[in-house]
Image 1 (cartoon, one colour):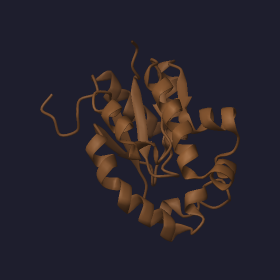
Image 2 (tube, helix red, strand yellow):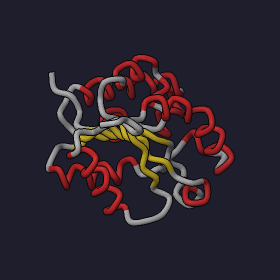
Image 3 (cartoon, helix red, strand yellow):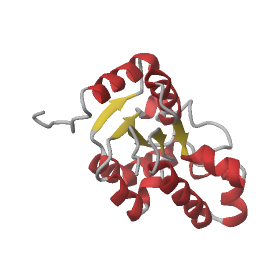
Image 4 (cartoon, helix red, strand yellow):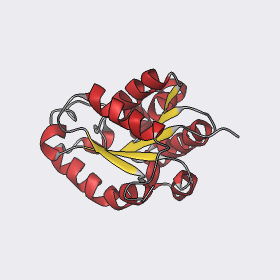
Amino acid sequence: MASPVVVFIGAPASGKSKIAKRVSSLLDVPRIDTDKVVVEKYGPIVDIFDSSGEATFRNYERAAVVDALAQKAIVSLGGGAVLDPATQADLKNVPVVLLTVSEEAVEARIQGPKRPLLRGGIDSWKELVAARMPIYTELAWNTFDTSAGDLDKIAKDIVTWINAGTPRQGSAS
């Protein structure tokens, strides 16, 4: 069975999709964005939340995660995908990059109706991140911040890390 080259996790609007696209291009490896998979099959995420509820969305998301993790690809997960204990278990043995972003940098990124859990704006985002951060940090092999700077440079730094054998952050290797 194939496994992902790297999996991106992090808060909503941390840049997972944008960085994954750049890393995929640099490595010439396919990219899978699980949120996009769900949207292609079932429609806009906000509509799923509004018509069927978060539990239905999470079921669709979990199926997309299982499929994505079975492929040699660059994978970006939706911010809440890591809430599923089965997904957490699946991520234990694959290289996981946590993308972080500051509150100040994310505020402009979260405007608009596409993010149903962020309808309360920056306060909703802060609560969500505080609740999820222990899971994110537990799963992460390495962390990159997307608050400032050039996303192309961040992607190149991630490729350098991948080419170095994806050592766990803080490891001696």
